Figure (tube, helix red, strand yellow):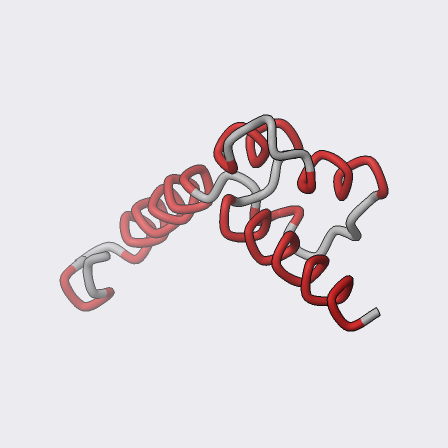
Length: 81
């Protein structure tokens, strides 16, 4: 993003900044649901090995990394029990 000093007009800078923020937020697909609790249905889908992690992530609207971490934690928890 351009520096505020590079703009002569403060309003032009604010327009540019707001447009930049909108584009940035649009790229971040599921972050608005970042701290959503995992439901039992989602956990069952994560543990299902019939689909790829990418397919599962799209289905439950979470990131691929979140799916992988959740599966790892569940398996680790089962090993301890």
